[in-house]
Length: 451
Ligand SMILES: Nc1ncnc2c1ncn2[C@@H]1O[C@H](COP(=O)(O)OP(=O)(O)O)[C@@H](O)[C@H]1O
Ligand SMILES: [Mg+2]
Image (cartoon, rainbow, N blue to C red; front, top):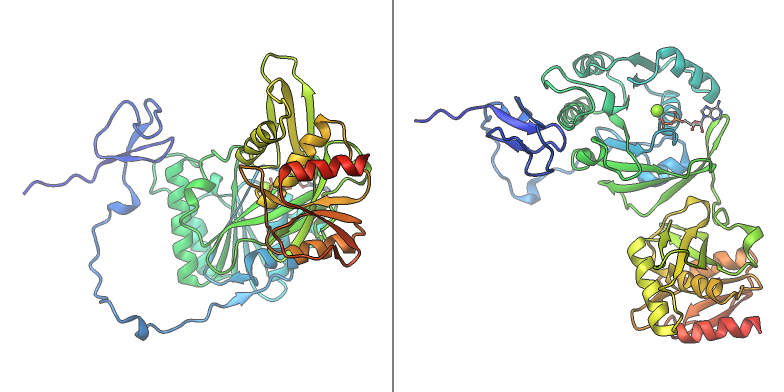
């Protein structure tokens, strides 16, 4: 019988595995990137004695949940850290991953043993930050180590309740020949750590850097390995940080946590509804406020559009914060349905404060901001806009409208454009409702308000 070879080749760029060497990786197109190596799956297959059982005989096991006491963090996780669960904390460099990880570590260390593995910073740097964040504690153990085998051994000895690995890109396991940060290393180290977490029954936060386009080896290749994926978002130079979950085996992924970066670390913002509205620009053309529903909360966001004559032959589109596909679709809808000539115009769309959302309820706000900028028609008073726009210009209903309008009322808004398809009265509390059925009608009412 032919002996099967254990030798495989894997691409150091994308991680694709091959049985034969080739000059170019057919997955990612990179040249000379295949190297020989042993892989985690190469061990001889173990035959398990387990047999399948009827689902009714499966015993239920309660997850042990440990709240961190940082409400904005717990909100995104569900209720808190689940013992045995691996959490990937991704984000661009400098966004505050190490800071929040240390703050969470300090909270848990009030009652339990925590291990903080720093691969990027020295112990004294971590100590310095801990002093600043008030995170020094007898139960918080630190180690500066990048060898994954040693890290796993320390976990075995210390048996902590929470391990923080900062970051996955700098650790390496001797079983894998490639250098740290490569897809193989990152994937192998993470899977070893995840196995250990399950075995020891401790929660793990794996910090991973990600570049603007999300392409760096690391977080993306780990997505299926971990139980929870959190991403830290925010704009450079902007004080607020948003924590979102993209995957959560224990809770919904709708909730977002809001923090502000201060001298003493990341501070929670419990009432963030008005944070993303710039009060100074509200009466300018091209600016609309939309109440966006995220999980259990409503955020008021300000959509801005700038429509200007292009300096080039073809108008350019720059879309930030709004989903680019949705933005382009809405620009096309304005052009076709309202007859605003936009092909020779540059259009810039933005959401104030670096906020990002793909909520369809934002549509009408985007369209009205474009129209308002194009025709120089400001919304003069405190009026908000709400509605999804269909391809034929109909305004479709939006979910959770009562909560959104309630938030507007709380913040003193006078009126709101709402879809006629939502069954509503003429007013909601003190907020007058401008009920609209189509794009044309919305823009006519906007012009009327201004006349
Ligand atoms: N002394 C300080 N006072 C206030 N903020 C600080 C201080 N030192 C660092 N920061 C903030 O912390 C951020 C770095 O956070 P960090 O947790 O190291 O990010 P990451 O781990 O995501 O790379 C900096 O961008 C800065 O905003
Ligand atoms: Mg860091």
